Image (tube, rainbow, N blue to C red; front, side):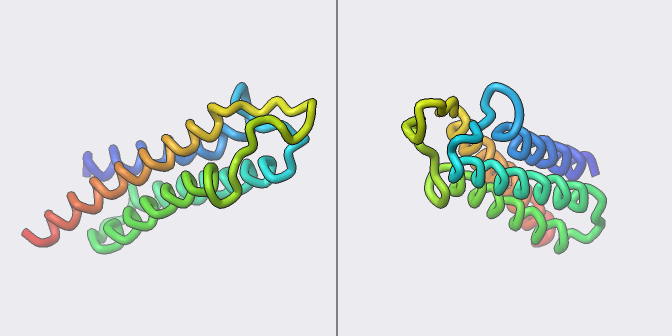
Length: 133
């Protein structure tokens, strides 16, 4: 139960950070870059989905269901990192003279997505090992 709470809470915190970073604060993307603004909206949606699945993961009793949820959270983390860099991408501030986007936004989103992937698949291997023993 303790490991399930730690995994669920840590993935929920990462989901909250993924949804908040491109929309608020210093790492917020500017409104001049329409593609980047779309990336911020997609990351917000992924962050909310991660939070929702993490809460379900925390309170689900079945090991098989937690295994599948954790694997899906890991894949969502990879998609979150790919959206920030490859799928939608990020410009280096040359879209307009008024662009105030930070390059650290993409690095933070990629780091959080990869960290979510790592935590989720460590939990997958933990559940798989418990299930097969």
